[in-house]
Length: 361
Image (cartoon, rainbow, N blue to C red; front, side):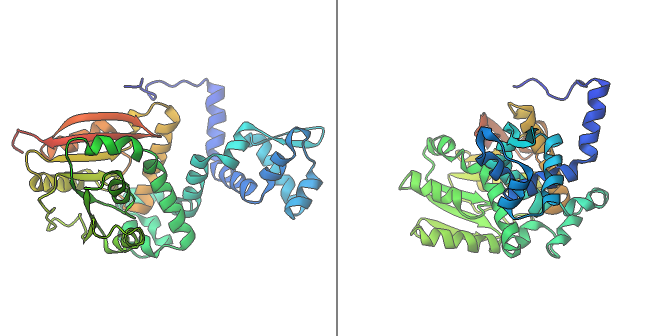
């Protein structure tokens, strides 16, 4: 396992005070960087290469007032997105990543379109254990009930964020999931059907049943039908939070990808206990999750910690990006033993392969 990142206070007093100012101006820093990106200013500066480009020329190229471009560029100087020498601006490495890095773009768009206004209610969400910030979008108990009804730009940012951290690992984990004769899979929380599509493409004799809320299933059904996979993928509309929902039996394996982090600990145990009841002793439970204490780099743990607050204010008010310590405890409490733990897959993921424990729960 990687060395713990958070055991010691590493900063000097001066560094700590500087860090405090970055936090104090955090909202302004974020919006300045976003507008520098979206307005085309960073692109114009990058296009000037090593020659650099002056303020007036930038303003003319992006068709914005000189004043507005000037205050943005001056903010960009102290943020570290651009440099200036002899009145000519050049892009920095950080500016390049703000402009081009897919991870950074996905995170910024998600933060702006889904989280930014909602974070004004973080204190109330903490106090009540409910996603008070979700009211920015609609009157639902959880964001999952309203995903299909989100404004198009917000929906796009949500799915881009959700898929970015799982899609890149499919090629690695498909052989791990299907190597032991799994032919019939139950995909709980199948979302838009990407895992089901990847599974049926990977092996011609695999069938998948997707369980999800009706709105998500309609989106998944559209994708599945468009690809001619309807004979191998079926759909079961259900709210897995409802205790009355019995997980169907008769499957070789149950697949839960970035699903259980959407629930509180007691809810996770409830879902897993019903999975335990549905599987026989030879069946497998596969869980794909990013755990903040299984990350190679400290910045990855940082991203997961901050994402937890989205769950607090928008998603449901009571879940998070868990540590493996907490999550594994839930798995064992539901009566499963962990056969394999494969860490650091893709950007941040851990794959857990589980089987019913011989110990009675």
